[in-house]
Length: 180
Image (cartoon, rainbow, N blue to C red; front, side, top):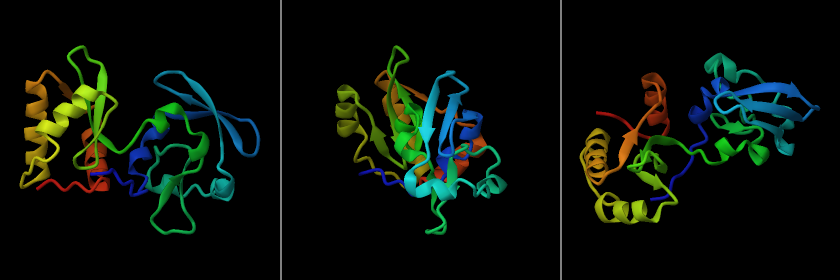
């Protein structure tokens, strides 16, 4: 199963709490700060999205959206990052993850994205996932989550979900997950 982004914008709908604009350097260039890590990055509007930046209608729907999230005027319902080509590292490594998987030492080793897709660079976790979880069938997503999390925890992994419940529900819907 390959993760397929729906470009719905849900994943960035609250990232205005994380990324703040420090200053506008030029018409298309900005200094942005990650409020959790204090890392600052210079980002540039993607050339084909410069005209989109003036549209601030996204904040009527999501007041805490990332400062660079914008609706695509050419494709109704498509929400995009206007600085995708130069986005900060945190954004580059992010996907529509629902759950983080930590090893016994608390080190991040994987993410569950979409309904059941594992994103990880950890070979041991991939082998374990492929052998024990990848092809697991359940009647509901909630049942799948419960079984998969129990299997991972029995093997020494920790599951963490730090997303607030209301945002979690919106992300699940955006990722195509319906809890019965």
